[in-house]
Image 1 (cartoon, chains in turn purple, yellow):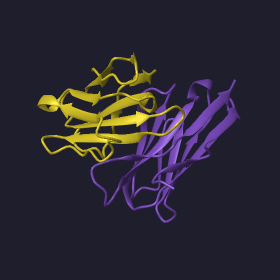
Image 2 (image 1 turned 120 degrees about the vertical axis):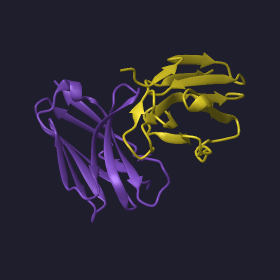
Image 3 (image 1 turned 180 degrees about the vertical axis):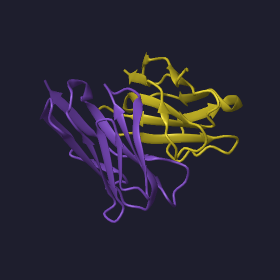
Length: 112
Length: 114
């Protein structure tokens, strides 16, 4: 599997419920980022968490990072129809070159 | 302020033709990326420009693909002799200094090769 894999690949929940997406990676990282993509167009940066951080909040978003398990989760609380999008994690490998590596994404559908 | 812009938004071309895709990064951003995304798939890295350094071309899928970045700003991605499998959304992103930082994406160019 590639660096940065999200699961599930697709998730459908009722509006108002919480949505949790996970990302696993293989190599040590400096930071991990989550991005959102609507309708196959440009990605929008949501949040960045550094390797020495365990949890970070931004509005209805909560990101956790477990470097021992090489995994991260993105929680969206009180979901809204407008949250329907694809969500990608991106990792910055500590020994890597100057690139981010994006995962394959989770397609989230919020049912009104 | 202006974000990353890309043109054209959509491009339909015939197999065998050459196409040029343009990216205008955010002013002052020294790092610029090109990605390709096929329908329902993740992002495939193509090429990375960082300042005046030689670009990282390791993601280009074949020698039909090339990219330039003139004056450290605007970039063009050229696909020669297009094939149907080149059909995808081509995304450009820029970041302030290093590619490992937050990347700001353009809206993409949707390429369809008939």
